[in-house]
Image 1 (cartoon, rainbow, N blue to C red):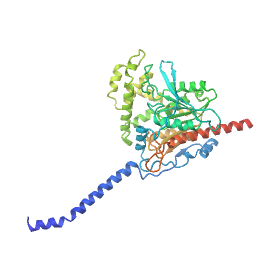
Image 2: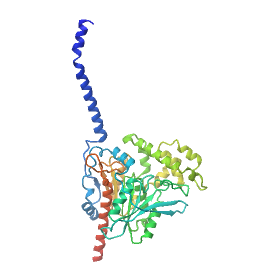
Image 3: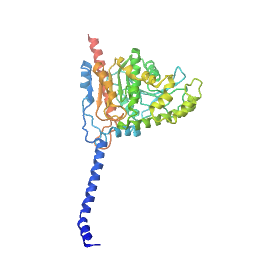
Image 4: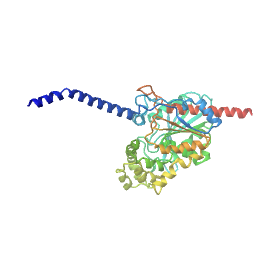
Length: 421
């Protein structure tokens, strides 16, 4: 080695540690940036954005239902990520889930299907002294044994509500179908049968209608289908629904917010559920589903493909567009006249923000509707907590019951005023 080369090595050598330190700092900074972006740590917490008309009822609700106007604070480290809220709900449901004791009811349907729901009695008297039953419709492919449903039921029971929870047709494990169809996006038959049973079994009871995700579509459609369906209904609460399947299915093909990945995962779940009933769907003479339909299901990678190949055929729809049009609550919800609370989260990865124009416009036009939009919460997450660990009860559980309590007391007070007049 020449003297010149040796001199170059010595002059370059001291710079190497500094260069490596700089690379380490850059790597750490990049990781931190990704974490901050993914966890959305820079996002500020805020009270829900409320859209409503100024009426005596809305003023009463906002006064005595403070959760609608107070800041919703998710867990600091991960709660501002709609993806983590959604994944935690999907994988775990809730923390420290209670196990409420209920009785399963079986209802024969006109087409040979057997609807089931679980009935849970109240654990105390309601603060109004009235007999009140919550009729609850869970999310896609869900039932009363899901953790988020059990947590909500337990909380409601402790506040004096009887709870009836629909088990979507075909969703319960180890429960065979008795007709060649399963639940669909907007079929209200089983929910209507449950409500009818509750009205007959408890002639004095008043009803509170609650729907989660797909269940929100079903309950809003049910109430809008006929004014008779609103009989004895105090109010309705819908959480994290998409309102229009036709408009939603277009957004499910987009990569924005990883929606296409969620679409694939939900499709895989639905595919397994449908195929678990293969023998029942094929073994009945009245079935609209053939062996070729189920064979094509194996290759399906989206909810739209599953809906087109199987779900629409349960009710004989000629096209996917007709199925989505007829089964979406967007064509019925404007006919609902009872107090209606629509809850959504801005960071819900399943519900595109364009769909939120539907409830916002509705709340601007109809005096019975309040639309509450949180900054965070994901899809059916709404976890609360200080830094890392979430609380057993979510903001969603608490706000539904608080809103319902306020409506119950409003109705009670109005009845007293009418009696005095």
